[in-house]
Length: 261
Image (tube, rainbow, N blue to C red; front, side, top):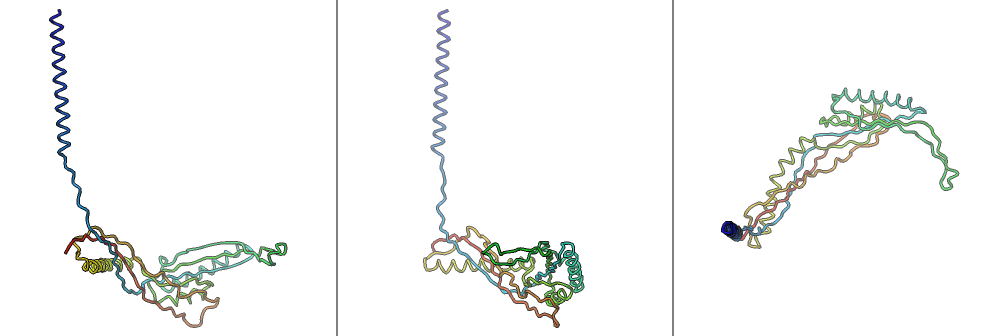
């Protein structure tokens, strides 16, 4: 019995020694593999950032006209009835000029009470606000590529019942804006390249690549009103409206990789 126990203990000790040897061997192999791993850190790149621009002058292809009808009456119903009559006549007259429904839209419609304010304040006891009726305002927006009709649209609208012209402006249609922008991108990049080359030459450096290109902006002048506040009566002759060319600019930010010449 004692001999059997001794044999078992000897076997357990042998297993323990083998396990320890394997663990140490595995640990050593892992450490060796870790020690042999090489991490690559790319060298820092020399770069220069330049903004290039390109500008062109184009003729607008879209006229935007905003006009409307204001009516006032002692009751909201009467004010709305008068306004609807005048606005329907205005829209119908404009459409007869070959302006389609897709070129006309309502941009604003309001009904608000009107008060007659009298007296001075201070003193506040002399200030009075007396209700006198309701005001209805209806505004039409006409967007059309028929630039030659601008003056005729204004005269026709006023003659039909419009008593307010807020603005007339010339701008570019979305399609033309995109076309002009696309045509300027290449010129803007070449401008950035030229600027970079001129700056690097005295430093003994040159462009060896491009790291990134960012289309940073596309600007065009805000559509400027050229006509506003028509009188209540239709003019005797057609209102002259003249277009003007616009400067369109696009810009790009380019990061160039640089190196010694």
